[in-house]
Amino acid sequence: GDDVSQDIVAGYYELGYIVEKNLYEAFRYYKLSSDQGHQDAMLSLGQCYQNGYGCNKDLNEALKIFTKLKSQNYYFFLFHLYFHFSLI
Image (cartoon, helix red, strand yellow):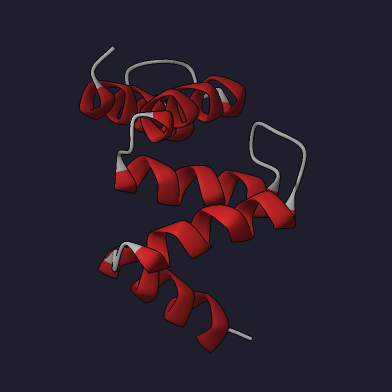
């Protein structure tokens, strides 16, 4: 499928927009999109693993994804990292 469309559908499931909220389906679509290299989906997938949204919480998997995004100089990731640690 199309990675951009999968990311959009995942967001719909995550927020319950147009469809019933379903974090498991959101995770599934983020994973499909992420597997194709879509960086926004990768960030969302990492957040799913980080928080256990639609999957078992897995901080090691989240860290792998975030490390990959950092190596790709994905700037939204850097903002996410700053925002997350500024709340601690």
